[in-house]
Length: 544
Image (cartoon, rainbow, N blue to C red; front, top):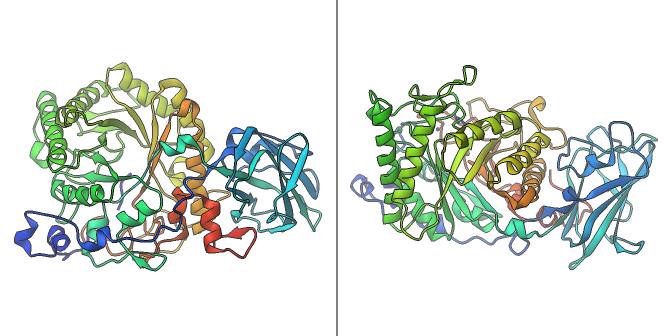
């Protein structure tokens, strides 16, 4: 995804990171102490909360045409179960007893205010009402959460809703959270490429009032990976090899793995821009193939030599229309260019493997941007596989305001898993926490028509959206949902998409405009526990 970045006049980033002058910038040693300062993890111990209801079976005592019980557990809060009257009960069978650590509910925004009672059963027809869910008041349109007693187990759950107006109460999603072995194996992370620039520009970041860098904050809130992009010759301060190597040291010191996104361009590369680096201009396919292989090997070797080997690498960024235009460009309408693209990608893979140190596991990703388009996604990967492009991981960008509903994303990842049997990672995703703008550059999301149904533009809506994405991935067939990376959660106002510009993504971050972590920073944890920590006295709790 092309993102509109650095401040004019900002000093060299490496000098600022080392706290020294320009001479020291040539030999970066480490990030400043802020990058590794400890912060109390407020979601520690809870782990990722997976919505087990998605893999269950739903039934109801009544349902309106077009709003069946299954809609309440499909992972998409924009599809509803609506009883035929002013009250109704929905029952979810999980298929086996599960240990639960929270319950979530989203009512349709057009529903009347309502009350609900939630009951659990381990089987045998005996139901126990949750202590915190006896005639609770539900808030239409806002994701809500209810804690469950520690150690609770259930085979089935039932929610009974009632309105006081006579109008039906429509449930967008009824979530039953618990830990899952598949989630433990997931690659969970964020693209923190802007972190060095933000720190250099004077930005400060806090989590619950405690200062730390985004690296530490994300780690302490459940991530185990950091994604960083690599440009060849960007404007000063932007992500080149020297700054990435410096960032990698901080990431490694924080105990996290490295995902490198090689763009094969001097600056932004995406489906609309895949420009050959200036120093590679004039090379034909044969020369470019050799150059791509050599360059990729040098890059991977550089990370390994400093003791921070790359764990996951994407050969190109959002390469739906190819790389290194015009030589490696794909024309979908004419169905041409696939052979050249395959040749260049094979060279990148060979270079990455040659630069990888012996005994170290390096995963190779091919990154497609249309995460909600099942047909195009399957065509893209089939074209690569039919031409012998070797890769380990399917990577998708999924932005709902560009790529469709979360149901479309689910259909896509399930279909790709069934057809190609490769691990699938959402390599980029974002959601809005507000429709406000933090600087003078227009945002990608600024109006209510761009907000997904069932997910308000609020920290709570953001939390529930990412949580639902993760739950869908955790239950992809054959355990092939391998992870998710949030894109630029730290890109707050102060650093532009190019020198002198602003950021169009400042309302899609996991920090507010001042760098304070939003409750949605806990998206990689248990959302019910996150909500309760912010609003412990309301049942159900709601994050505004």
